[in-house]
Amino acid sequence: MDRTGRSLRVLFFGTYDVRSHPRVQVLMEGFAAHGDAVEDINVPLGLDTSWRVRILQRPWLAPVLVARVLSAWWRLWRAARRAAVPDAVVVGYLGHFDVHLARLLWRRTPIALDHLISLSDTAVDRRSSGRRVLRALGAVDAAAVARADVPVVDTEGHRELLPAGARGRAAVVAVGAPQRWFHEPSRRRGTDLMRVCFFGLYTPLQGAPVIGAAIGRLAGDGVPVRFTMVGSGQDLAETRRLAGEGPAEWRDWVDAGRLPDLVAGHDVCLGIFDTGEKAARVVPNKVFQGAAAGCAIVTADTPVQRAALGDAAVYVPAGSAEALAEALAGLAADPDRVWALRLAASARARDAFRPAVVVNPLRDRLLGHLCSDASVRAERR
Image (cartoon, rainbow, N blue to C red; front, side, top):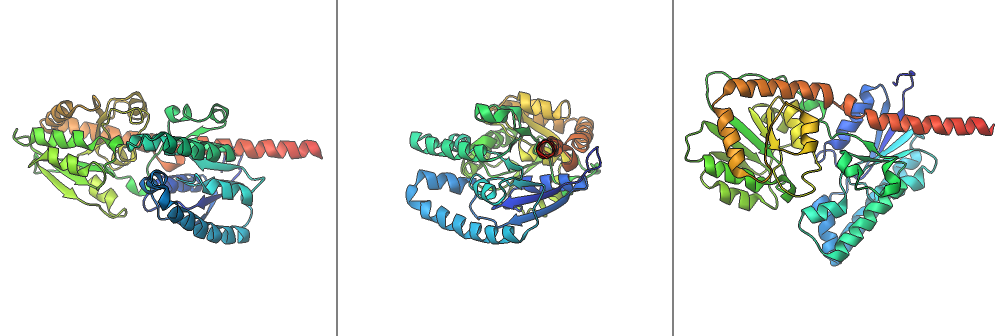
């Protein structure tokens, strides 16, 4: 319910997968926390970002995407025709195609597209620089944004990447963390060992080889630290090679329902460390989630991450394994500082990363559309 006492009926729509990408859950929880009625029509496509980029790199795989999309769309269409008309529709993460179907179904309803990633920007990050691929992905991005009344991005840097005509109607909504990630920090007693975690898909954006090299540097120094490295992906093999025999446990993955508790059992959560342009524009999931879980955050020193975390983190130069190893060694030698950082990160998360807080810019923009539409209808009477 907003300041005027109005609640919304918000419909989440598309082929997103909440289990793999918690962003949709954050937005749903945010609207619900304001007293809005939240419904969803969802048929997961089963193809993540890497698969979509791979299909455009290998056109002979396109029938896989077409078949999945058409099958999902038929089920979405049937469900939508039976649903009550919402006040607003939110097309979930990776909804570059779904937004076109949403516009056909709800021609007069405000539609927001969670444009958390640009496919063309992601292709560059994944080291796919073919001109034809990038042009095709750029066209998909632009067409999707054009169909939405409110494109949603996560940082001001990503707003600037939108077509000029879309920037003014965009909403900047931080990634945030689902409510289940929020834990009160608990200080462990009886051990001097500092536990550090990293979780992710080992994409180039994350700079995981920097972490691997830092683990390798710490291996023979007697620093009381132990790493838990969760996930698999493009840069995993190189990260493990650089870590050598360093103090790390490697897990292919952890179920999404168990991951918050696992992370909360650590002292430090690592962010991203790549030196690319995209890394300089993002605040990753793991930073929001790690702070919510009550961990101290160590991540690359970028303006956008400083803006999100302020003094509640330790920053190191992007790409520097030496600086990361030194920062972690310094923290391992100062448990009181680690505890203070954990408390600061937890407080920052409670104040700024909760679903009810991060959803406000989107909710305000949708309410503005509804009020504007109501005024136009009143003038026509």
